[in-house]
Image 1 (cartoon, rainbow, N blue to C red):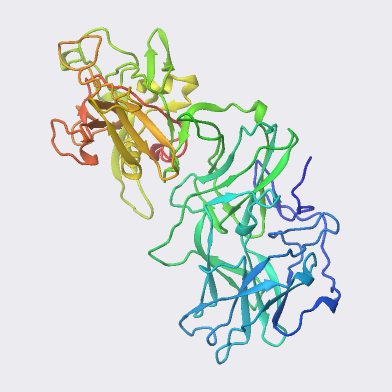
Image 2 (tube, one colour):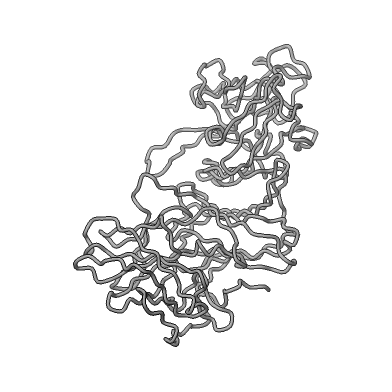
Length: 547
């Protein structure tokens, strides 16, 4: 098996099934390097790495020890006083002296030495250097940020700029001994010569549990351990996923990739691993693995999620990851069929598909009217949804599986979206309307929802089927998008929530209103259905098992 360029005998590997940590199979001795390369004439800090730690450059394959590299930079902070003194400190950039490159002891130099305040006896340092990294003097915390989007660079199988380390040095020695700050997620990919997998993505199954974004880290003097917490700031950019972009392999042999995650992340609802292909022609190939057990990611540990052979994985086609907060994966095509005919996706993303009354699993052959709609209140399931520390949640209801037309596809791997998810699609995306004479690519009517990551979702304007004048040809086709959600409208059980667009705005119905909260229609109406992948991101799945 191929190994990471500078990884060997890594410590704290965690198993696929249990995430149980185990000891390193080798101890790394710290040995003094020759001091002939010590630079002179500048302000200098020496820097090593703590024994048995996994770090940015990690362990060299020749001697199982970390080696610094040309171009490495650290940020050095000088407290303005003893701990407890308020204030934010700006760091000073120190650069590795080229003479100590490829050495286990690096000498970092600068023309400026930050001034220690009265009563301060230690300098602090953070790797990698960043102008956005700050130091809170009151508690000696460094505030840093784990990047959400990471990329394999410089021949490594991880983003070395995401491999964060922290250290402190007594003012009389100016010697740093770095500790690794983050957790690493190991995923081994084989059979990827053709570049089928382009992104490795890890998501928390609770969007309030953050894997990237800002955090505070403190290296304590008393037990030489790290203290890590999230900063109390209103401008936090915490995200519930991390993603590593990888290149195609030179061959089909296994390659170990490492995604860096924010430490001390408590994944109370588990996690989801996604292996994603490149977005092209309006869709992606995505493999999804869901683990619902609670897990905690600790600093300086590797969590091994196992090996995945691209040629053997059951990839989903015709799906797209829009990087939505709930992690919802949308399908890129509508559905057709049902009843005696198998339910399938339409052949083209521009096709309207069939029309379904809410809770019916095939298209009707007679009128879509209240007199012909026989489904009662036993087709949906009520539950209480609680968020955060809320003790009293809100009452909601969704269709049961057997009444969800999208759930009939491929063994129930899909379902209709909830109201929360259609609202998220509209509010988080940019909507472009193509109705009437305004057509997409000069041919198609509908709505294009473009996400912040540049990917998009096309919803054809299929119109709807209503009233006694049923005909095989929808009303308002070309001028309206009409899609069912899985959620009941709680103020009146004769209605359900919809995703409807009309003439450059969201549609309003008999209950009036034009906001997302007013998306609703009579259950007997015939509408198109756009499935989602049945995964995390649907609040009901975290409340009622086995739904």
